[in-house]
Image (cartoon, rainbow, N blue to C red; front, side, top):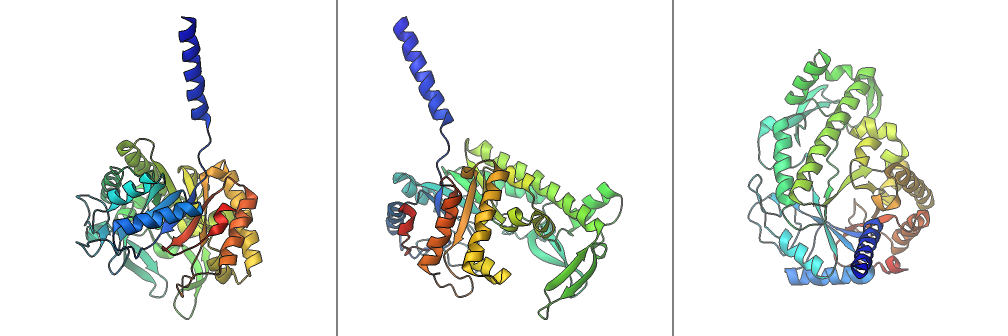
Length: 382
């Protein structure tokens, strides 16, 4: 009896120790595309990633018309997804093979999936409208209207089919936003009228604005109604996020979910709310906030140098950790190519940002964006 008690105590203590272990720090490679000609060559790339210290692959599981994503696929549709589903066109069902190859080498897989741009069903009634400042009127946009419950049910079904695969997590694309000029679709208009007892009037949202020569907004002055409208859109995003997370969890117990967020969310949260309808409460609903802290993009947008961008990103990471609760719940994304030229950024620049982030916390998640197969980032093991 005493021996039985000792064994039971040992197993209980062991189980408790495992339960209390902190989550593994994510060091990820986000895959935009691959020239691998078959799954065996892609597996060789996975082995090379792991050798450099990568423990997670963020694998794109959607493709839009004109994209050339993976050389090893046999495309059966011009756009759609890379997993089996009945609610969307399937380009090629390759997610299972990729997941098996990664797990064979003890590398995690996060499926990178779109939301509002998943308009592959072609139902125009599900689409949103935005206010065109140059035309001063509404125009339709190829994005799902998330106030339309049919759109949300479609995404729930799509995400359940995605979670039928043994993926470790899902990264939700940065189209899970409602920008300042969006949210004027027919379903949104009807819901707004029901809740506020008045028509949704796009022109009442902005008291003044100025355009650039290319027609984009240079300066804008929001009204109080706009701020109420933005808070309402944010509440809708939080409600939809809850439903998508639930759909994933019901299909795969323990699956983790990350949300792509702008660096403004943790630098200037009032701007993130106005521009994207994002706030800290939304980010906290997810297991991870994947912060698009792209240093080259920040340099160009703000007209600053690398050291200034590094200091901003360092501060951004510290704030994100406070908001999310611990460093393992934050994934800071480091840019590896110039978005405009598609040329690789200098190795020393990528390494510099990595070490700036590592100095904030050695437990902070990191993602190299993108990884296209030929990178050599030895600093990951320094």
